[in-house]
Figure 1 (cartoon, rainbow, N blue to C red):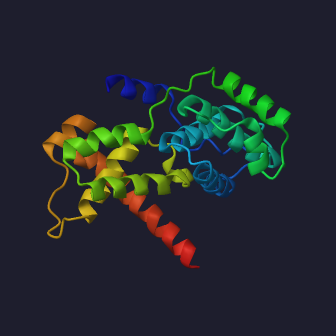
Figure 2: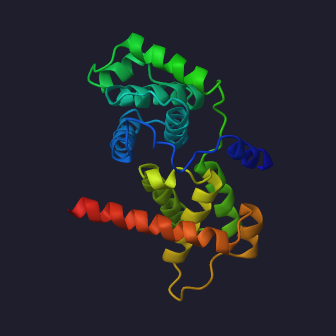
Figure 3: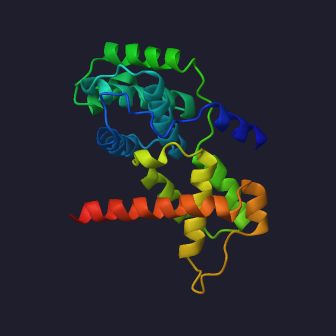
Length: 227
């Protein structure tokens, strides 16, 4: 587990990494929302989705010349790379051509794949929130419902630009804190035990502000769906 913490520090995301791009946070949200649908259609592993978004954000942070018309190409190429990294049987490049309605050719996807790998120096081994959540849930003796709720909260935050700069371990900790507070806690008892603090390496004072921000993000997403 120690190596997970070391790796997440090695690949930080700046909270303002999109400020100098032609692409804005709304475009990123639309792309991520679409990538979630693609992920479901291909029936890929949960880890593949998180690795895809990690690759996408890390690439956009170092490549400042991405034009709007190529953002979807970056997204599907990131998923192509992630699926090769995580899946036993990853989709073929032609599947990604089809899923993008032939907006990009096989050659364009392969070229972007190479460009992404070069920019990231082939360093794809960053841990994702799911890795940490499994460990934290065991430490919390979380119920299957509480663990599932935390996973759902983490997935909702993938779309939100304001959450993508938090370390994967913090996203997992905040999601679990919210889940434990919501499910089977009618008396609102303190949920962040010494055991969770030990295994997560975060105290409640560090986790609570991020959990509150996460709750606000989810409330905003729910409101936008009702509009």
